[in-house]
Amino acid sequence: MLNKLTLKQAIDKLDNKKITLEDIWADVLSAIKNQNDKLNVYLAINKNFKSQPNKPLKGLPIAVKDNFCTKGTITTASSLLLKDFVPQFESTVTQKLKDAGGEIVGKTNMDAWAHGSSTETSQYGKTLNPRNTQHLPGGSSGGSAAAVAADMCIASLGSETAGSIRQPAAWCGVVGLKPTYGRTSRYGIVAMASSTDSPGPITKTVEDAAILLNHIAGHDPLNATSSSEKTPNFTESLDKPIENLKIGIIYHNLEGLENVWKLFAPQLKIFTKLGASVKYAQAMDPKHAISVYTVVQRSEVSSNLARFDDVRYQHGRDTFGNEAKKRIMLGTHTLSKVFNTHPYSLAQKVRTLLIKDYEKLFKKYDVLISLTSPGFAKKVGATEGSAMFGELEDMLMEVSSLSGMPGISIPCYRDEKTNLYLGMNIMAPMWREDLVIQVADAFEKNTSWNSWRNNNYQ
Amino acid sequence: MKQKIDKQLVRHIAELAQIPITAKEEESLANDFAATLKVVDQLQKVDAKGVKLTYQVTGLKNITREDEVNKKNMFTQKQALINASHTYDGFFVVKRVIDAK
Image (cartoon, rainbow over all chains, first blue to last red; front, side, top):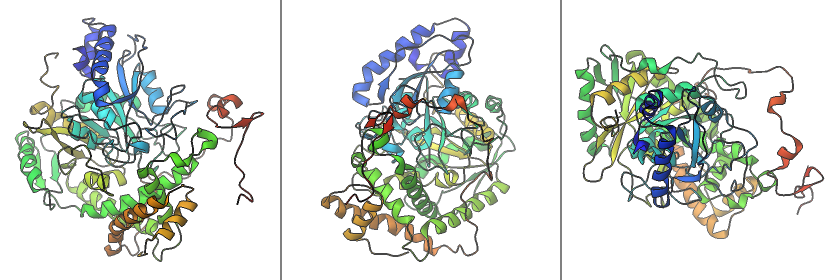
């Protein structure tokens, strides 16, 4: 059962020599062996590790989304085109993970090329939600979120373009942190939309997310858009009072959200109890964010995926799945010269308006809070015939992605009948992950929704 | 922004994007595009006159480095070719592009 330890618990117990790394790995590998055939979480599994007692992550098993290039290990981005692609270099984030003593236990399933919010578009089969296998894990980092939920790792890494860390975290009842754009390096990650792609941690607790972010953040000379902004110690934001913080609640009066809102609204009371000021605020209609994101993302996809062909990657463009074909072609179209008003330019203008809207709100509030996704995890097969599935599931996070601002999703409600979770999305201004962590940690520690907080291993 | 999405346009885009598609796909892609572009069309309703474009969110500009070879970050010829489908004498073999038709 040592696979159920949080990252922090595992580190502490190894430090105190109460358990051995071998025992943890044995339990994690056995959880994988027992569940992977059914859940389809891992595309590749690594059983080799070395104990690194002097390094902060000690040699603990960490799951990594299969769009991080890992030197010498096949990296597919869940696509057939990259079925045999063996990277000759290591992504900066996985290199940093390894430098800190993290060991990759496996590469996780995802929506092919990260195009989706369900993990159903993977060309290696869908992943099932460990909380309820009739349901989807969300995506695109669905495998990484499921690996955490099923205790098939101690912690994991995912990447987000617009919701791809937070939405699967919400659907699987785990914690997902999207850092500020440029906080973590994109070098060596199979690109989707270069202007918003942000790798980040998916973990059991907020504390674990803070620990992992400390190790993967920082400027990278190999990624020109990574920032030289100083990396604070994010664990210093834990166990901090939130009294006097100003919290703005947004997207509370959207049509169609009434039923989940009834479950979500009562959870906000704890913030008032802890001394924060909680007020309802009005943000621009998220439908504009959907439109902007659709144009920006498709355009950047068509450009980024132009490089993939059989000359360098063995398999040709005929192997693209339906979703990738759609996105590449739509992006080719939105970048073409056939329009009177150029959609790409118009989208980038409305993007400015959306950012200004949030900046205005952040003059009044320290953090903004919304639901992560408009509902619980959808049933297996839900993406069928829905051309805009992901955009609708991710709409409440899209502004923070398009603006580069950080956000976290934490479990904030569990439905007893289905065992499915709702996620709370906490967002802050650029470079203020500290605030996001502080508020999320306070919520987690003062409520009982996190399924690891009350485990018997503390 | 309005433009009719028909199979002919889909064929044209597929050619530009170098995506091989079947006749059946032409039809379903045309439908999907129409649905997606309807959402995109909502942008026309936003008053964005005179608003600046956002290409980059962190305000970084003109990031350069010294024009020096970084030997730590260099492939050997063998590494560069390792994922290629066809090689010859240390080169990539590519399909004919000029006069291909």
